[in-house]
Image (cartoon, chains in turn cyan, purple):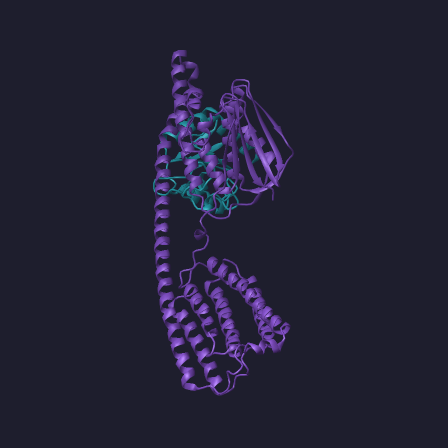
Length: 130
Length: 465
């Protein structure tokens, strides 16, 4: 089973996701702030990161974290699943660059509320291909 | 059976180009005017050629009887010079686009005006500066300069016209002009300077008055245009701010529902077996209500996002339509299976230029509608075809249909027909508003045909390439 890091400011949602993932046998750690997230990811080197986009202090903090992970040696190839409360197909008030798949090569975008069976399947697939 | 047609709306031209010169005209408008100038000039070239040809065809003795003489070759020479200058201008304009700096386009118009004034002065010399009214043709250029340029530049054109005209008057007095005039045989018996000035100075005075009036009027119109453009800009900005605010509020509303659904999922995933049937039923109802509300919020968010897509040329990436429709069907297959609704997809793969993300949302809504309003065990027919050099995608269901009165309103925000409300109380009334917005963004035509009780056919018309 894998070590998964969950970065989401919605504690309830994060706890629920963690409970289901732990039930699947994964080891899950939760971060409720995007600050120092890259540092923690670099320290703990999880097998996969689940990352929310919007945080109270920065509506695009998740994008920033994902970009920094992609630029950091040792963790740049880490599979990332991005969670967003809005439909990711259109750029609400994000810049076009924020959702450009070439510039931000995250493996998956999932819209909240995440369907837990779909999340489990996606994690399985990503871990297999990692 | 009723029919309704939704045609693409062309965005206002003013939104395409913002850069403008001191006359307040955008580059697009100025370039259009530069092209218009060259077209008008061909008419002048043709008139000069005709004048020369008529002059050659008529017997000089006949002309002399009426105090006229044949023009000779000078109309041909002037038309040749004008044609060459026009070809030069046209070639110059070919290198310009809406993105060309305003000053470059203005330089082209300046070149055209100065060329015209020089050729016109040649014409005035040959026809007669003071004994005919030909000198007043300078007024055309003064008026046009007032419209195309600001007051300073149009005044320069007026001064240039006056300078060239007074030079011809002086040349006439000094007997430097070739004679005779085309119209009056005895023009150059000997020009009288005071008499010439008596004509020339009031003429220039009239030009200045015309310049003042036309430039003042043009300035007033331009000021009004600028005010309107500024007001329009303010409205668009306010509209965008409201839209953004609406999106943020809706997003914040969605978060608690995500929490509720997440908790329901936890109940289902980890504690379902521990719950008695009656509790499961209640949880199921909460789940259904919450999902319906989330669907509504998602639709509002999607519509808001679609409306915040910047105006302009839509994306023209190659989109494989059949593959896209198959993918969309996969996404709604679960719902279709629950209602035992099947699909028939006909037509070969077609690749069209478009925005695949928006097209996916458009067809997802049309197919979801077709499934939702089909009866149990129904069939949804999808057909890709080509007609009138366009690609058509036909989505037909055999469900409850839409009455003639309702058909014209189905694309309105939050509109739900009474039959739809009775058949599916959870519909948001935004699915077809999303379809309309995407059709507007991508400039597509959509037709809807329906008969109450017998199903509905939506047809999307797209450019083939």
